[in-house]
Length: 148
Image (cartoon, rainbow, N blue to C red; front, side, top):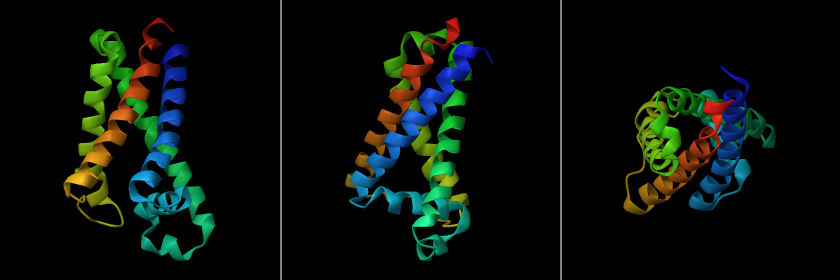
């Protein structure tokens, strides 16, 4: 992967992943620490909530790792399909939907929580808006990676 692509993955993944923590906190009306503990719980189980604030650290690392992977997939695709970089707004919004579907119907059911997503309209709308933003951020940083 070229230097520009790596830069796009790192910037897109870390910025989108960090903003996603804040968005999840706003949507769920809880502290970002609670969100990070919930992320850690996907791997470590619900016991993370009894581990104190320190369980937020693996949650942050997992959030960033997943975000970097999600960004890497998009950047790699945009380097092979130039329209994804050219039409980055539409492509980013569509990618946000893909991320929403994969996270809610693949990742969450396979996590230590083993649950399906909340499908009430308000929660779905909030989560989709957050994933639209996530996809837009990743696509924004990926749009220039073809030249790097």
